[in-house]
Image 1 (cartoon, helix red, strand yellow):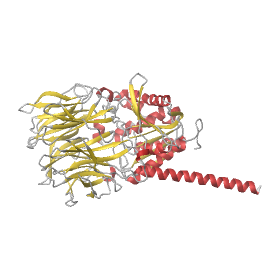
Image 2 (cartoon, rainbow, N blue to C red):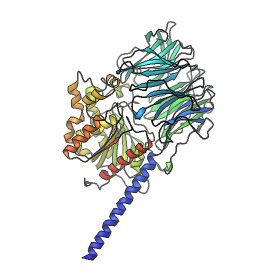
Image 3 (cartoon, rainbow, N blue to C red):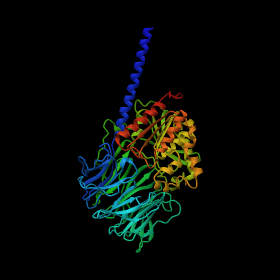
Image 4 (cartoon, one colour):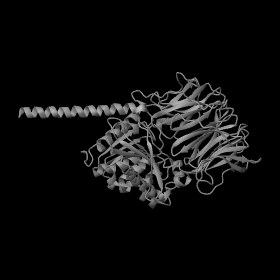
Length: 635
C-alpha cells in the first residue's frame, strides 16, 4: 500500500510539474509575442533628413526621431500616457502630437521642439475630446478639433502658434475637422461627419467662417480631400455616386462653388484607402485596398498616368508622407508576419529601404503564420470573406484544429493581414484563427458597409453562423472546439454569437465590447452617441429594436466559458458594458473571468497590459479548446 501511495504521489507531482512547465512555456512564448514593437505616424522634417514618428519600443507609444538615412533613434517625449500621432511643422520649429491621458478618449494636443524642449499643451487638459489636425503650409497655424463647446459635437479650430491661442472657426453637428488649408491661409476644407458612414466636405472662408457645400449627395457617402497647390481644386477620395471609392479632382469656381468632378483613377477590384499629394502638386501616391491587402501607385497628375507601381515591403501600408522635395515617400508597412515599421521609398526608382526596426526579441518572424483568403456565401447568398490562419510547424498537429473566430471592431472596420500578436500567440499553441469580414465591414464598397445598419443588424449576426460553417467546411476547424473573440464592436459580435448560437462555441473572449445598446447610448461620449444613431438605431425612436439587438437581454442562453477584458478609462464603450456581462454570467454559474485594466481606455496600448491581455486570452482558449474533440474541460 505504501508503494502504491508513493507511486501515486510521484505521478501527481510529475503531472503538476508537467502542467507547470506547460503553463510557464505558454506565458513565456506569448509574452515574447506581445512584446513585438511597432512604429507608425511618419512625418518628414522640412529638409527631409529626419523623420518624427511614434513607437512603443520604450513600452508605451511616444514620439521619437530618426535620421532618414537610418541610425539610432532619439526619444523626444517620455509621458506615462500613450501618444497617438505626430506632425512635424513645415517650418521645422515644432512637433505637434496627441496624447491620451489614461489611454482614454479625452486626447490632448501638445507642441514640443524637435530636441524635446519647449513642451506646451495647446488644449485645455480637461475631459473634453480633442483631435490633432494638419499644419498650414507655412507652419503658423495648427488645425484642431474639440468638443469643449458642446459635448455632443466636435468643432473646428485653428491654433495660432505665435500668439498661442486657438480660434473657433466652425461649430458642428457631429464631428467636424479641417482636412487642409490653402497655402494663402484664406480657405479651409472642412470634413463634417453627421452619421457614421456619411460625411460632406465644405469650403470654409477662414476670416468669416462662411461655408460652401462641395459634396451634395443622396444616401450615404464618404469624402476626404486636400487642396491643389493653387487652391483652385480639391483632390478627393470619393464614393459619391458610385460604390467603390475612387480618386478624383473637384474643380472650384472663382467664388468657391463646386464645379466639375473628374475621376482620375479607379479600379473595379479595389477601393482607394489613402492618398498623398507631393509638395510640387505634380504627383499623387495612391493606396488601393484589394480585399484587405494594399497596392501602391504613383500617379502623374498632369497626364493622369500611373508612372510607378512599386511592390510594397509587406501586405499592407498606411501613413503616407512625401518629403518636401518630393523625392522620398515615407509610409508604414506591416503584414501578418511583419511588425509595423517605417519605410522610405525612392520616388524615382520605387525602391524601398527600412528606417525603423521594431524589436522582436525571441520571436522568429520567418516562422510566423501568414493567412489565406477564404471566400464563402452567407445565408442569403451574399459573398463574404475572411483571413484564415492555420497552425504550422512540428508541434501544430493535424487538422481539424481548435479554432477561434475573431471579429473586428467598427462595425465599419476591416479585418486585414496586419501583424497581430494575439493571433500568432494562439497559432503558436496549435489554435487556428479565422478573422472574417462580415456585412458592414469597410473595404468592399458603399453598399456592403451599410448592409448592417439599424434593423439589418440581425443579418450581420446571422453571418456569425455562416463563418462557423465556412471554416468547418474548409476542414481547418474542429466543430466541437470553436471559440469566438473580438474587441469593441467585435465584442458585441462575441456576445451576439454566444447568445444566438450557444451550441456553436466552446469559449468566448469579449474585449471592451458593447452588450446593451441602452446603456451604451446613455454612457458613451455624447458625440459618439450623436453619430451612431443611423448605424445602430435611434434610442429615442427605436428603443424596442435596440433592446432586441442587445445580447444582454438573452444572456441566459450563454453556456460557453467567457473571459471579459476592459479598460477602466474607456469612455467609448464604458466599463458598465463589461460589468453587465460578468455579473450576469456569475449569477448563472457560467465560468467567467474579468480582467480590468485601471490605466487603459478603449484598447490596450501599454506593453505590460498588452502582455497581460494576450496571456489571459491565450490561456483561456487553451484551457477550453485544447481538450480532445468531443470532450469538455472541467470548469
